[in-house]
Amino acid sequence: MANRLFTVSEANALVPFLEGHLRRLQELQRQAQSHFEEMEQIKAVGYKPDGKLILQRDFQDTRESFDRSVAEANARIADINRTGCQLKSVELGLVDFPGKVDDQDILLCWKLGEDALRHYHTPLEGFD
Image (cartoon, rainbow, N blue to C red):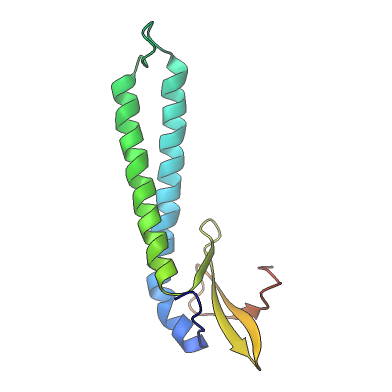
């Protein structure tokens, strides 16, 4: 749906879906960052003479948790992309929806926490 154009009402209808996905994506991002930091700490403990990590099992468990978080995040991002809207920032919760006003290409803009779309900008402008 890369070429889909949205009306304001069509974009607003996606807000509940996007809100749930973005809140979960933010949590997954925090989890992945935490798992990554834990893996770095485990590696800092050191290695055995054979080159394996001293805490190899802990590293593997943490890596599996990291991979699960990343896989779920990727699936949620794919779900969002399938709608035709554009995820601009997980951290800020920004999503754009391609549209037109007076034959001019625009991007309807929504931010997590807003109950409806309130802004738009041209494709050359960004979130301000």
